[in-house]
Length: 322
Image (cartoon, rainbow, N blue to C red; front, side, top):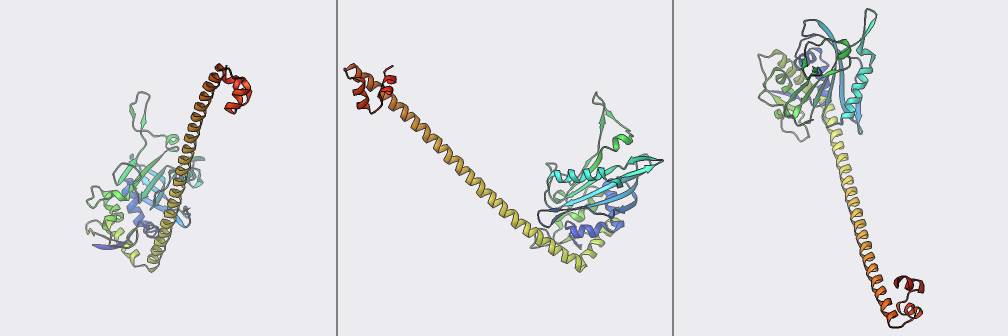
């Protein structure tokens, strides 16, 4: 077993993929094809969440070989999130990728859109599909719902993208595929007892026969011994701890607000009910006065006498006697 720094931490994850060889191994496995050239983009998109919380976003330019054996340039957008985020944030980032001039190349005087592959490594389940790795590959059909294969269109593939989702909570110790083997470095089932929400150290198995997996493990063992990385993990824990406190306060305030709203609705309903009861009583009194007015009139009382007896004006007496 080997004790590695937990790559669910942003600082550790970045340290891992900054190593070109490690990034190649990991991304090649997820893409299911060998990456011949890989370049981390100079810029890194990092969006703030709440106060200091961040969503890790790193872009790569890659040269791969397609199904026909031809080399192809693709853009890989790699995003990792510990906490559940709204879809809009991911959509906005994807939109920025479509607009980015770095994802357009010139060939023979013509502009071509580079295909985009989106990879999401999530620290939470994002759907009801309990699979560690989910692939979304566009498929094409004609009007008769017949699948169209061997689609090759710069126009089509310039407007759509492939997507890979990794759900860390569904990673399992008994791996079934090559990609699961390499992704097992994220498996939180290998946690070492820790007081933090996420363990800073994972105790993962070593595999002498798998050089790529061992390379990733060794990179993370090294991260575990880097004082700067360990300090950054501690800071990250503090940020998430403060975020948890903030979230609890917000939830408590929302609960109190919801209770206050419920009480107001309940009070309003009671007032409406009381008003309805008063209206019923008023109607009952009016009917009683009408009967009394008619009876007094039959006994020979004048309108003035009836008005005085019932304590109502003469006009009202006339209405009652209609």
